Length: 391
Image 1 (cartoon, helix red, strand yellow):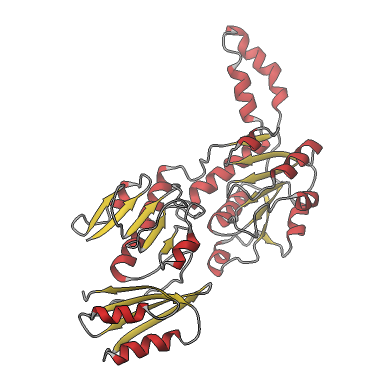
Image 2 (cartoon, rainbow, N blue to C red):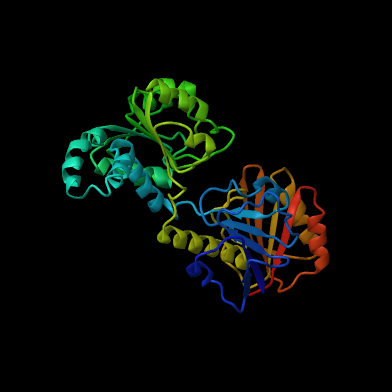
């Protein structure tokens, strides 16, 4: 029986994929085989030696100590694209909020409570204070064309915007989904100089921290509107405040409020609602659970952020799973140990990603002696060895 620890409430439709006869699921579990979570921070957690996988029901993994997991051979999964439609809809809402002074207008109307029959006339007189602009015909710059960015670009184009996109790492799969009416540019300076609106759809890492800064803001038109439904930290808030004060930036819409953000004028801060839909939570949970289930039962890896995609159909015999540093002579060392034990390899898959390698090895034997596992673990650079019994 596998033990699954949940650090957040996980949608029941996802958990229902795990047969209770094969899985124990609880928020408090001793020695879990896998952890499934949403936003809970694991950085101060001790990782139990039993832990084989961590699955984030969402795209970002900033709340997971990925490097520490990699060192221990723990596979970290995420669910890219599962909440993409929910985030796309919020970005489109952000475009409207950045263009039409809806929130201020609604707050003002509430202040008229008690004016009775005067309200219609007061509304007609006061509405001029909340005049906005239409998005049709305006230029939207989409920075990042992953699952969310492509959906945003296509939707904005359908709403009559001129859409330009920038992503030097766009995948073939996403490129095929992108409308041919979206203009791709090769340089960020070209993109930003044309934009009336800029939406960020990129991950947060060492290279993208403070991505929107003084230099990039200076490339933009005056009165530009910036939307950040991707990650806190992508925008340098000091430079943003200066740009708002100077009139360079008309509005900043963000899904990541903090004390500094709330002190800046012309900012609309939303309480991290982009993926907060019932559909997104269900989709993320289902994808996360399916990936964990396939990994625990078959050793297959899909949508890992620290190990390569590796999928191989199960054979009748035993299956050996090995994670290791991607260094020379590793496969030959593994093969030599198996050969010395008289173990014949039926099928083998070796995949590499970002300095790490993962091996799936099917053998004809139904069982394997524990001493073989010890020898494989002793190979310098091996971080994990698992044996799956014959089906």
